[in-house]
Image (cartoon, rainbow, N blue to C red; front, side, top):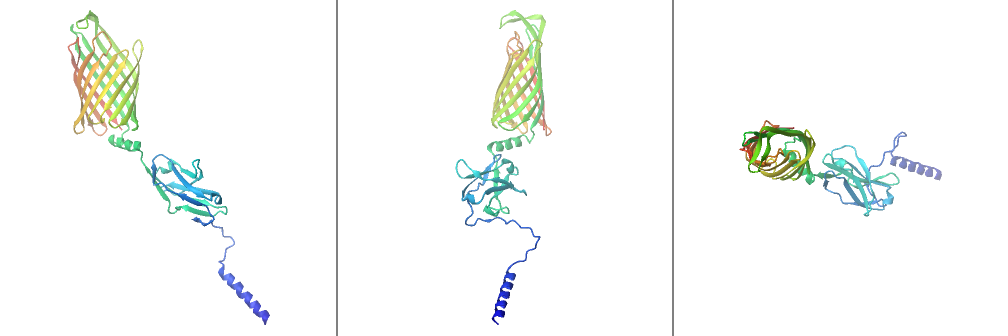
Length: 372
């Protein structure tokens, strides 16, 4: 009887154990454990998350980690905001103390990045230390001051970064006392690309200057004597490269390098200009240009904007072009700039210019610009 009681007791105990265990299929794959809060005995991560970072810069993730030896791998997993796949950036010892991981700037291409921190212990178990894959922490990219200014400049030019321009100018200094003509004309075409940064734009172009006038054969500066029959032609063909530096929307500096040639020599010159005030509003600009074979041109320009969509300007000009025995010339020009359609701009200029030993006459220019 005692034997049967012992046997029944063993059978009941075996049935109880069978009911407490879930059946496992022989071909089931082991499933990795999902991240879980770090238990005691795991590493402890202390981290203060950033809310934002400047655009274009990597995100530095800093943390203090206790008992890091218990989790050989502790890393930041990140993705661009709205992305699907996470990338990993491991924590490394920082020279300043603590641990540091870096999320590359490219991850902020969508305007923000999402991340969480996870560790893996020696048994392969994952431990969540900050946020999770389902609820990551978001870091927004804030535009830099240069980016904000570039956005403002882009709106001002309606997003058009390229500009083609053609300009023609005629300066007729009038006739000399013995009736000889004295004039020059200039034609220039160029292409401008706007970067909208401190280096605002780069401009490249080609031009030519031609002039004809009398030849001085005697007299004094106040009463010169010119040849009755001889005239002299002067001119230069040139190419140029120009940089515009913009400290802010109301302060520009243009610098130009000129390389050209006359019939007899190479001409190396330059030009510069400073503008105070907005480019498409009221401003004052002072400029100068010098080419050895021609001489100098200096101008003071005042622009105003009183009529919608129309710019007007007055320019005082002083010049020794073309460099001959004649005296320097000076004059005043009035200009109007107005749009033609959405991408074209037309400029018309007219005024008076003369020399001390000439009677003076009209001067004018026309310019055409296409932006896209």
